[in-house]
Length: 330
Image 1 (cartoon, rainbow, N blue to C red):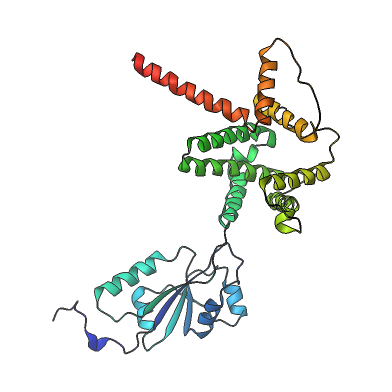
Image 2: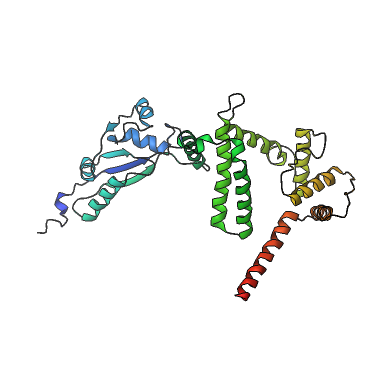
């Protein structure tokens, strides 16, 4: 008889159950699902190859006996004979060595395989990968010769560059580029927040940045989180402007308008502030192209057109025409 052929006479009546229990490292240790706790308490054996597995202290405190062991697939199957349940704690990405071994053993037909179950003990919530980003940024800041020396001022130009590249990806409609450029902009936020932690007088961290933003969003959306009502986008904008006016209590409509932004965007922003405040401020006049552009930008903003975006679109069309002319000339 072929030695590799399955022999049902050697198969136990109840081959048992193997449970591969995973837990996300992005969730606090000990916060496991109820099915996970039930399985752990009723298992015949609980095994873990990593003596530093973060869950171990909490499992032992809960009365779960965990053995430090690295069984092979054959040993694990044999240990389940007679209907026993064996739980193996594995990392968040699983244990490919063990799962590959179990797959080969099951495919060989030599033994009756136990039931195999992958049981997630905890799940990542939306945004969980941001925790990884903070950890990676922290390590890079400590260990990278270039990153560890950067300052807010030294990084400022990169924030501008990444913002422009994001706008370009949006205008191109390239989804892959959009995802990548959003990541680059996010990197600037996390990088600056990590540098800010080191300030000896006024330190703050990424949690302070996120916390302040959450408070601002809630406060400026009373129609979502409060008792106000807003039926149209115009209602929402009115709420937003009223709330900002109370928060900022500016002495001039020009406060908070960054003068370093592109000229058309600056002109449109000033025009918007004047219009929203209900002021009548005549546009300066003169026989220069600057005053003409200022008037065009203010008029465009009043008509609901972003002059900066409009000029970029026109420039892109001009670029395409140039390329076409170059191609024809060739």
